[in-house]
Amino acid sequence: MASLVIPVNSASSFFVDAFLRRYPEIADRLEASGTRIVVFGLRPFFEDDRDGPTPEQVTEGFRAALEAAEQVATPGSVLFVGQCHAGALLRALEADGAGGQSPLLELSPRRGALVGFIGPGEGGAIFVTPDGTTAMGSWDRTRDLVLARLASLLPGGQA
Image (cartoon, rainbow, N blue to C red; front, side, top):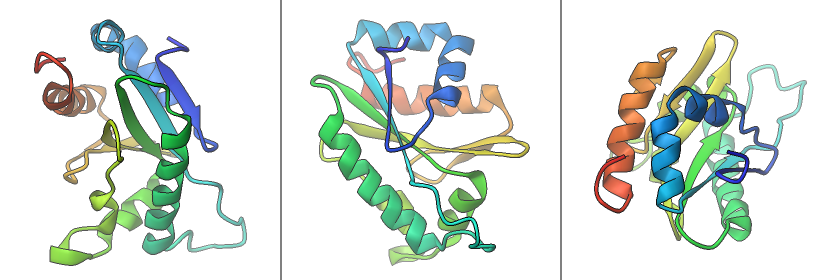
């Protein structure tokens, strides 16, 4: 599975690896289609910032991290997963951009597709799809969201 998931920009592949071990049929489908997952993360913010990064800092950080991740992504089919602390991710989702939607949800890679964002925290992790749908603390809900997203992205229309 190490060749299936590629962590870049200080990201950890722990949650994506754990997810794929829990649902090997998804890993098998990705492997069979030649798809790789690039997990990209934000650089750590300063410890003395008690309120955490602003929504704008999170969005701009993800934008820069995604651009860097695209540079190291392997040839072929690639899916991107963004990662940062759950608190920062939730704050970024609350920010209003054009049309009342968080600017974070407007991020899109130039090649491949964005599957969503993972936000590990003290009580587990949150998963957010590019349309803003969330799953918190539920492997099965996350699986349902990932399967729906992959069905629209992978060849053959199903994960």
